[in-house]
Length: 93
Length: 205
Image 1 (cartoon, rainbow over the protein chains, first blue to last red):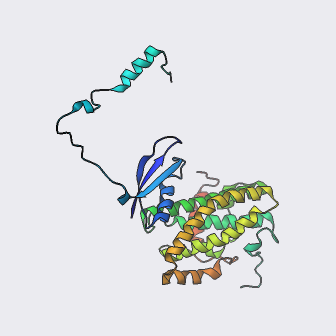
Image 2 (cartoon, rainbow over the protein chains, first blue to last red):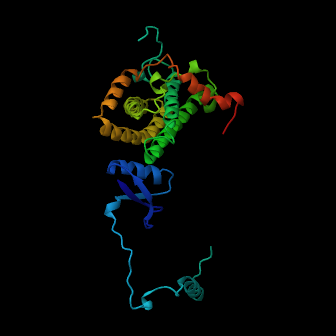
Image 3 (spheres, helix red, strand yellow):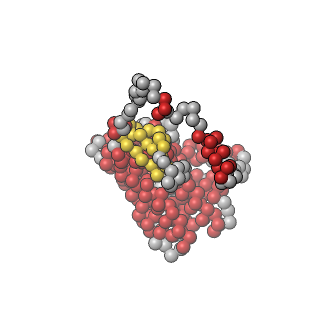
């Protein structure tokens, strides 16, 4: 059985897909997930779920071209930087 | 059983022998078993298990190093010298861990399971030691061994109805604490393991 594994790098951060492991049951999956994605201190927590438990959506119908729903052409990074500069709260790294 | 065997049985880890003798026996077990288990790297039954079993092998060698370091302080030497610069007859590991079991996974898991059981008793005994250094290290080792035991238990439950595995358990059970004589294939392991140190004295890596 294939299990999908998600890892959290630091507390409070979202879990991100790390990869998958093949295991005969949950117990083995826990062990293998721990070994593949947790033994180097790279994760503070892991989720593992059977692949069948994951539902996928890969079609996003937009027949009427409602481009006002989309975020393309709207780069936030620059605008945010300018706003911060105006507010005098720009953090220097 | 030979009558002249001078080694104390391993269930009296710290009694009846010196601290050095007792720690070396455990360190040698961990080093040699780690070596033997690492022989599965790349050829374990499937990829995930390959990584897991290699990781266990690495942990065992890490435990050996920590134990050698304790002994090395007492003998004013180094862990590497203890691990690699002794003659084959000076190693105190049990014949049980010396056996080369690749490519027999059933016997490998049987040994893993039996070893973890015996090792648990030994480690718990060390944790109760009056020697704070030993007790402290044993507690650290035990926290990692707990995972090895889970792994061994998991495989044991999965294979316990398989005739090959049952046979392997029966075959290996009596050998767990047998110390003194090395098995013939230990010589080859020793040759390979000490090759670098013997070709370049004091080599480190």
